[in-house]
Length: 327
Image 1 (cartoon, rainbow, N blue to C red):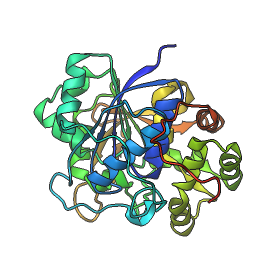
Image 2 (cartoon, rainbow, N blue to C red):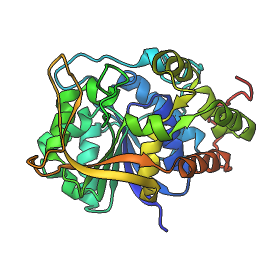
Image 3 (cartoon, rainbow, N blue to C red):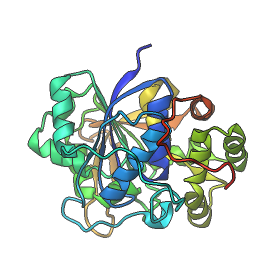
Image 4 (cartoon, rainbow, N blue to C red):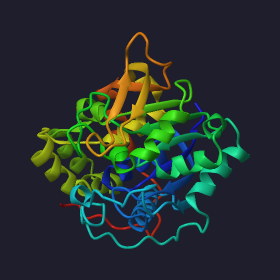
């Protein structure tokens, strides 16, 4: 099967970085460009982290376009308390060898599908600011992509940043609402934090396996998630840390991993009290569905893809950061 041509929009923190490894090194993805946005970290840090992650995967040739520095109408509230000040577990990684592209992310999100209509799959791993801004310039944008997969929301309304909201939607709910209103279920699929919490938890045994694999990508994936592991333990109570962005990427690369999904009409709460909550209307009299929601994924299949990817040898350039073998 030919590799899937991809555009990836990311606020590169530690789980985004693992998702980039999957797309760049699994053999299933053909990344044409990465766009970055403020979210987990300020956009300059997220751009740096995207470049580092691609270097680790041996793909420093992929262009990275910086995007919006803040949400559409709100101030930025980052997740550096989760991912570390550097977004990568405070591991002190050296700067990437390559600089980002001069062109803005929004222009890239518009131009790539215009030049390759119906060919590219868009995967979003971040607050939806860049995507909403692009939609305001081209309301038919989603028709130009083959499909759009978003790591966004929590279909069970169990939140990780508030009682009912997932971070990517909460960080810029106005943008998420614009995206939802432009969506159709044949074009747009959301994979929420509820899926990650059920089917993408890295147990202590999984974490040990990453260490034992011992390749640069495996060491990188393990070390950058150390602050996430602490936060997840203290805040969510999971027995291990979950990987929301990698499981969304895995679904995009291999939709056969989906074991349960539904079409539904979704709106986003933008008021302060319920900020970022998904409003899913499942009534008989509900408006027509506007997106597909993934509800469950084959956990074993996802983890096999992850472990196989980070275990594979890649042509890591001499400039790539050296990842120590021990934590």
